[in-house]
Length: 227
Image (cartoon, rainbow, N blue to C red):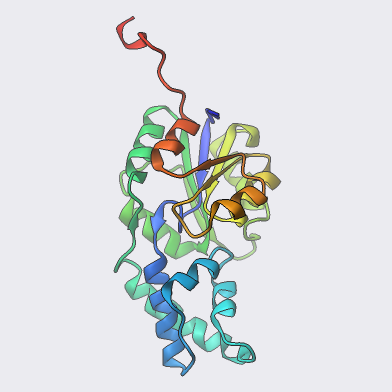
């Protein structure tokens, strides 16, 4: 199935960037600072995706909700200094973005990560990509899976929702796409599995960057280059 969208909106963590190590290490630092139990890094795969407030809530032990504000503040400060320690684009992602750009597809990022961190990571790690819009969580704008932000991005790109693909690695991203009337594309190299993506209605699931490109860009016709 090839979608041939005019625009593509990407999630960030777990989709474009392999950022789990730095997120988990920062929150474990915050938990340790406040004398709370830590989590193995793989556990953070199931904590992320719905914004930093929810991330901290899921990491706190039961009955320690009063520590939320303190742990959040410590996490924010540590992560701001260490977000580039291990975070890198997933293999094949720069090539996917370059091909989409060459095909004239408009590109954007929409994350539930705080807006400032989202912009900083994209600017530093994907500086060659001409994203038309890059947004994280902002005050007064509902987080994904509410479609408000995704629809606003589509309008900024000048593309109808039905001509746009939304690509992400979690149920939140699939639900955002479906609520927005966009193509829902799930990728499996991030934080969740195929079952989650399928059960929430992903229309296409890509297991590799090559599969993602095949889903987004039509293959050239045989003999087209020589005509």
